[in-house]
Length: 197
Image (cartoon, rainbow, N blue to C red; front, side, top):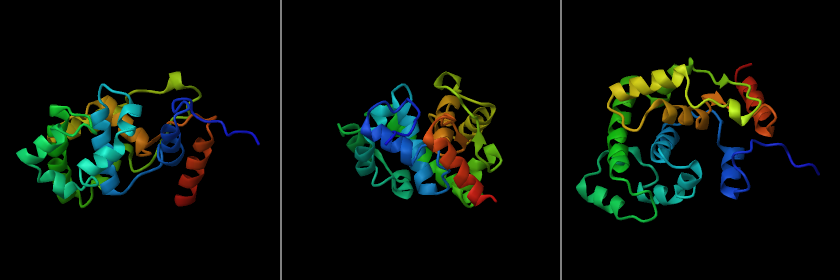
């Protein structure tokens, strides 16, 4: 049996392959999951996605399953607990940013009803298909991620530069950056067609 062609970036890391095959690029509309992805992408700043992904379960435990309301209420005791947790990335600015972002996230929910409704406006509610033929053609930002970054910053969010926003857009399926030769590219396009006949 011939192995399906895939994007090269997961290499031979089983966790990266599972993430690529099951999550990356799948349109995301669940606020709880969107918050999780925003948290993880913020912690990725300056690091590899592999590093963050391998600590994902530790983050899940440390942040009470990415419970938005609980994280938004975190105070000094919780901050110190997170700073002493060797299982996560112990970065003072990123931990403070996560707590701040949870509060900002809830403010957006209050304004828009859901964060999903707010965040997808930057791509007009649709997945942008970049039809990439090689990894070297993959952008690190776009006019949409620039606009998202600017707006998030104006609302008080931290660690939301355009590159981080673009990585989030890739993960959350706001852009389809699977290579056209990848087995997941066609699956995602077909799923979108099924949902938007």
